[in-house]
Image 1 (cartoon, one colour):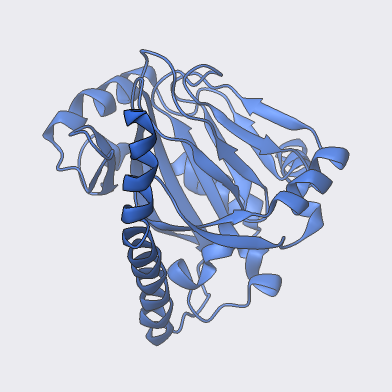
Image 2 (cartoon, rainbow, N blue to C red):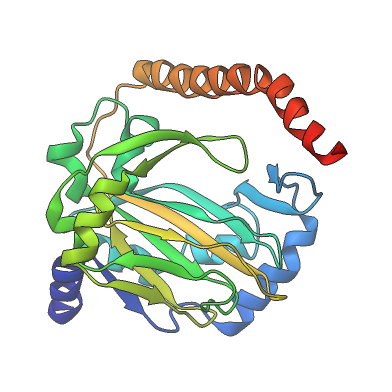
Length: 265
């Protein structure tokens, strides 16, 4: 465990091979047909996210895995609690990219009231491959060791799914690229990536015929206290940001129509 924790602290992540059995991975893929999708990919009926599925079999087998909980506890060096368990589908051909970001950017959603600069070490993500993840189907990419740079500058954006997100600024990414290597985290079904909340990561779109289903879990130090009254404040900001962007986009429709006139010539 000392070697694993050392790797986690030095690189910002550690990849554990074969933590979930092939049988559970296969059942997890098959069972998505029984789930109600919480989010579909725009202009399609293809599911993108399924919400929290920790109570549904076979996902409950992953959520209750003693190996995962023990690993999370050892990496945080404290008793832990799981805050969410999500399924994410980067669908074949049309699965969208995910911007370069740090999990700590949205701390006020999952841990309102916590000080990001002081508490980031008390959180970690567990990213589990339920399909094969490779370069062509949009595997996760990380800037290895980038957590050593602290909380980076970010910009608020609206992503493909019309959701508010925060991405690392181009200037910050340029600086990272001169100092840190980008690693393609290729994974086999059942592999699990444990990473901290300052590691810069993202993923490209899926250009292949192979879907890339993932389970995403978050753990935090069990005795942390949150100020739930602040959750609505940040949620309202995110919703207002999307609304403002949509309003400004609607104003551009006439400009778009004028551009189309060029095709008449």
